[in-house]
Amino acid sequence: MANIASTAGNSAGSMSSSHTRVIIASSLGTVFEWYDFYLYGSLAVIIGHQFFSGLNEASQLVFALLAFAAGFAVRPFGALVFGRVGDLVGRKYTFLITIVIMGLSTFFVGLLPSYNSIGVAAPVILIALRMLQGLALGGEYGGAATYVAEHAPNGKRGLFTSFIQITATFGLFLSLFVILGSKALVGDAFSDWGWRIPFLVSSLLLVISVYIRMQLAESPVFKQMKAEGKGSKAPLTESFARWGNLKIVIFALLGATAGEAVVWYAGQFYSMYFLGSTLRIDSTTTQLLIAAALLIGTPFFVFFGWLSDKIGRKPIVLAGCLIAALTYFPIFKGITHYGNPAIEAASISAPVKVIADPANCHLQINPTGTAQFTSSCDVAKGFLAKRGVPYENVAAPAGTLAKISVGGQMNEAFEGTGLAKAEFTAKTKAFGAQVGAELDKAGYPAKADPAQSNYPMLILLLSILVIYVTMVYGPIAAWLVEMFPTRIRYTSMSLPYHIGNGWFGGFLPSVSFGIVALTGNIYSGLWYPVIVAAGCFVIGLFFLPETKDVDITA
Image 1 (cartoon, rainbow, N blue to C red):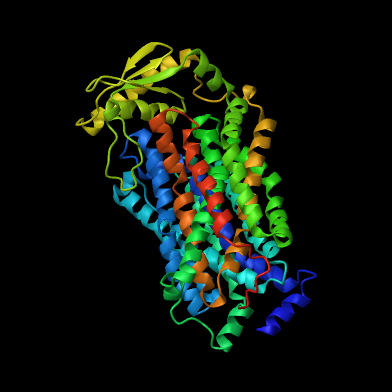
Image 2 (image 1 turned 60 degrees about the horizontal axis):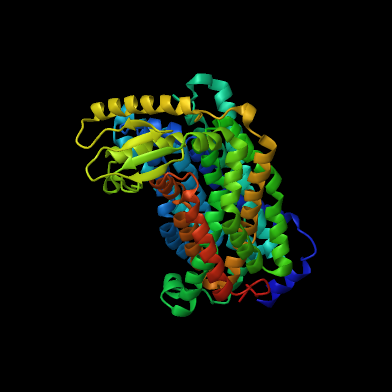
């Protein structure tokens, strides 16, 4: 493979038009991924109403987030299927197939009838489409990263692969542009049927993506390997049944991608959820704040990719994990202070307490959709978590009904277990109105007051979170590619990436929401990313090598 290395070395001085075409074509899958990601995240409340209307209002958002997470759950299985195909057949054809599956899955969400039209089939089909997309995504990123890295000149793999990461921002801006344009076009009908437009518009992106990818040639490194007869006949076996490679896969997951994933999702998706659902900032303002932070932070994807070619991948990724773990709590407290200071003031002047039998309080995370949170404690905590109100837990005698104390004023909840759906819904509504009135009197805002929000400071804090994202995400593709040999690279790197991003990252919103609902502390959900990022720093520091000077043609 000396001719490949020589060609790469000779072209190291500049980025050719062919390199640019390779990067653009490979990155389109990432645009699609994050277009759908932000689309679903931004419209989670509407999707909850459309497809989970058979549940009470407090549960709709939780189940919408869990349907969202279902796509992440199956990503590792897609990594196994498509990674194997990519190592056997080739990079180009595999990620051509994956983008078609991704695009069609997103498009069909826009056509799917609601729960009121076809009943329980609606959420079942929605989850099936999310899982199908997740399978395709499992093969998409590994193919794109491998394809770009195998085209990159020597000494520029970090820079070249960082352009894949930067397109995530394009996906966000595209989704925001389409959502806001659709809202302006259809007005009040957006929540009814206009929300479908952004999903249907994705068909245009699909057509463009397929056309461009059809023009690509196979990776030169892969072609050379096949010509020399050095390809793997059993990439799954070589990747995961042989300890020498398996241990690298495990350390890549626990020492790199798990931390990268939680920093990425906390910094962009959980922060968006925190602004909207906890601080009660309206959705359009929330989206514009996130967009502004991304606009400021996005160039750092390329900067840290470039820097990783100079000083290494490992120190940048691990530094991002460590700094995030050390600063998340003060940053999110600052976001509260500058985003909705009335919550801070009210929690001091009229503290809220949930007085309940601890045995009747449950962690409200339900991936299977079979459990119902109907105890008086769950009713009380579910309402407060949805309203974004911090509270203190106080143990009550066994068997007593839960109460919410707002500045000393008691509000008794009801026991919902065994009630008919209609009666439970009616009592939940009445209880919410009663406690809501007390919260209003105590100064807990139902919505953030724009006059009290300090938008420049919010953008600054959100931009810092985005810069953390760029530190961990900018160099990660090059680092993973360089850990594994060509014959099993697609398979080996895809699995730790998608377990990290699909499981550790994808479940972050629902896990963090459940922790907040249980504890009453609006910041307690941050313990999940903090612990994972800190653990990743330690494992990566001691067990992962630096790879920037590795010869990936081997």
